[in-house]
Amino acid sequence: MRIRRIAVLIDGGFFLKRLPKVVEPKFRDNPDAVADTARILCKRHVQRLIGEPRSAQESRWLDHVYRLFYYDASPYEGVSHHPVLNRRISFGTTDQAAFRRELFNALRRKRKFALRLGKVVKEGDWQISSRLTKQLVKTGEWLSILDDYLHARDVPPPPLSEDRSREFEKLIAAWRSLDAGNVALGLRQKGVDMRIGLDIASLALKRQADTIILVTGDSDFVPAAKFARREGVEFILDPMRQSISDDLFEHIDGLVSPLQRDTPADRDASDDS
Image (tube, rainbow, N blue to C red; front, side, top):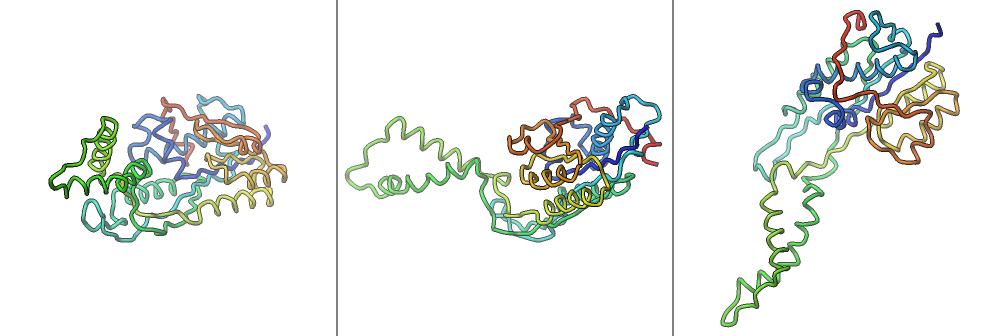
């Protein structure tokens, strides 16, 4: 039987964002479950390529794997004062940071997984979510009207029309809905996309893999996909059931998303030995 050389590259930020859309909570409710789901995702891709049934009692899927790469960024360790909660936030001690660290440790313990970590940097102050920004900006339009009502003397301003009253009620509702979940510190990952691109180029040039499976929905990887295909590498994309741009679709050899909501925890001890 032909031994394939397969590399699976998982964009961790994208993977975690899409998991709620494609699997049930029990497959993502703790770091170990997420790590197992990442492994199952890789296993299913490889089994499909080598023609092995999912129910195989003695799976040899790892024999065909060069490496399984997981890309993410180390948690932000900075401190900032939250404008809504009015208290100091130490990002390195949050539940999200602890979850990420435990996930990374769980992945490190899995056979053939390689962790590639960038970093998170602060590029701006606290920002209101885009969902509310447009509504809240309209406050400026109402300042003169409110001023007229606040400083009315003998002749009160004319009453608002029905349409204007509804607009004003929506604006008030938007301000009242502004809570801690609607603001975020201006943080950005650095070095993650670069590491993915470099690994794709290295795998292709060094002939370490004849098939690359990239788990992402980001069209920024089009140049990397084109390069790998020019070097004779089969390039498969897994957008985890998310639609992708025509530009990205044009430069891949296949589109496969094997995870489903009833993803079984098909964990065999022999697979990770």
